[in-house]
Amino acid sequence: QVQLVESGGGLVQAGGSLRLSCAASRSIDSFYSMAWYRQAPGNERELVAFINIGGNTDYIDSVKGRFTISRDTAENTMYLQMNSLKPEDTADYLCKARTFTNSDYWGQGTQVTVSS
Image (cartoon, rainbow, N blue to C red; front, side, top):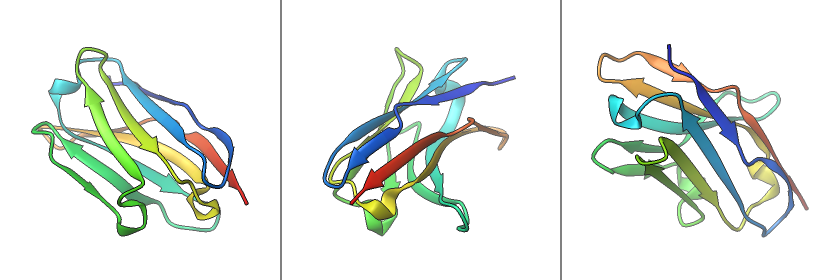
């Protein structure tokens, strides 16, 4: 069983920065891809950023140029650097890992609140 543990959320003023971490219980090289999702109250869960084992990344338009996804195989951790935060970025942020056999694993989430 895979465990993913997110951390790094918190309360920040608009324009500020946070770095989220997603620590995996096994080598992240065992995952084909990893991703960050977010869900705000009353909204559907949305994919924010994606990275695959080749290092290819993708982002939703609303965070391009502000967020950066990365992975550290030595630490078995994925990161999301979030800069120039806006109130509309407020949400519960969750990480997901997908194996080469298309099994998905989710973390428990970390709350990000951006005040105006």
